[in-house]
Length: 338
Image (cartoon, rainbow, N blue to C red; front, top):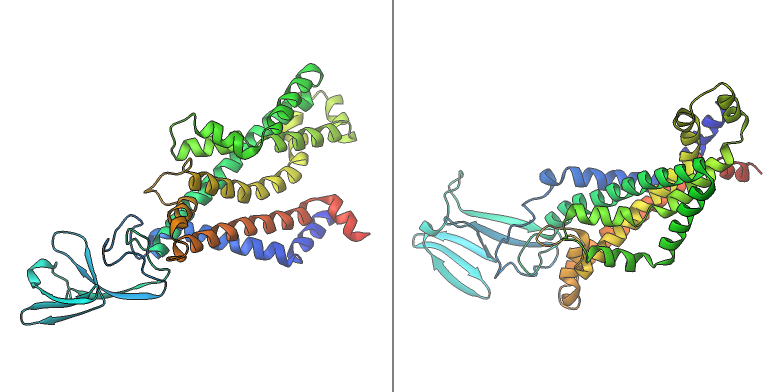
């Protein structure tokens, strides 16, 4: 009990861990609440002509067309002859019949574009909010798949021993020989790219370190007194694994998995940037950076803001992993006490 209280106090005294947790919670809340926080759907093109590459903090008059879509204007005024609109450096008068009826009797509304728009006139703030759902979901599910495979392979290797252990560890060594991005790209090129395929490819190429950790922890635990006593009582090996070995082996593996969420989110962004990840028009932070790569000198915000979001996610999960290590790793506590 004293160890648990000490671990909790270590976590509470870790400012970087608290910062990481706070950023991760905010990102998660933003992803869940995207439909409420986003001013429009991520696919809506406000005005593909006048709405292209609006800079951050822009404000424009938005007129909803009766036949669907929107018209952006620098200024607009209702006159007796229609709506006088100033857009793209020229003025024109359009008939009121072209615009949809509005409950307050006026088709004119001013909209604020917090982070600007992209080359299709889509609101960047809305796309980043919805992109958080995709990028974080991929990172979390791929990390969960990696953890599951790592526990399965590492647990079987440690418990079976002998040639099975040797075979599985040689398989792990062989997979670790390949550069991660090369292995991911090779597998991604073999499948039809969709959200599920990206998760399976990322999770299926990142379980090796977790399997080594699980194996090492179980090998260090299986000769402990409480495991020997459980075997002496005739407890089934499978029950020993689930009741005693796995719970005690999990802390370092969970720390590694937390760090891996940010790592996998970054790899997903690289895949999407290269065209092997989530495909447009589904917004992910990676393909949003790819969309803005060709306009860095003229419309820097299109790539910069999704890139900042990726950095925040990676930093948050790394700080969270460090905080968990301070809390859950008894060896770190012993080092601190010394």
